Structure formats: structure tokens, C-alpha cells
Picture (cartoon, rainbow, N blue to C red):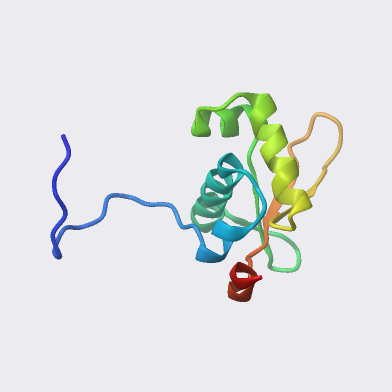
Length: 111
């Protein structure tokens, strides 16, 4: 059931998506994935030896979380990495990569 929103309506649980990401040259699926990864790092991020947060998000779990195929998720991760929105550090064969989330600068939206 959907309700109309009034000024005092509390928001349901939401995922963050920086406004600057809206104009970046990546697919809508990649943008939704970025929001999901950012939400994950804010709630379950792990600190590396330098105090920088990263997450481990296996492809199959990411695909299930986004209701997308594993191949679509791999393609979107590649898009995000090529756009400089994430950095993946591979851990070895059969190991889940560490994903670091990079935050866009607000002026990136005006380019």
C-alpha cells in the first residue's frame, strides 16, 4: 500500500546516491549499484591497514541484491571502475575482491 507524503512523513530506509553521480557517463544500473555499494560500505565497511573502508561483495550476492544477472553486475562493476567511482583490489583466485568506494566531487556534475 502506498501513502501520500506530507511534511512529517518519515522516509522508509533509503540508499545514498550523491547528486554528482547523476551526470557521470555510466548506465543507470551502474548508478543503482553504486548506491547499493555505498550503502553497504556505510553499514558494513571494513577498515584496511590505512583506516580506509572497503567492502567484500561477492558477485552472486550483489546480483541477488540488485535483481540482476551476474554478467550485468560484472559489466556495471567494470563501468564504475573505469569511471573512477570504485577501485577493486583483487585478492587471489577464488577470493572476493576488496571494493573501495570513491566519492565524486560535486563539481563533477557540472562538467
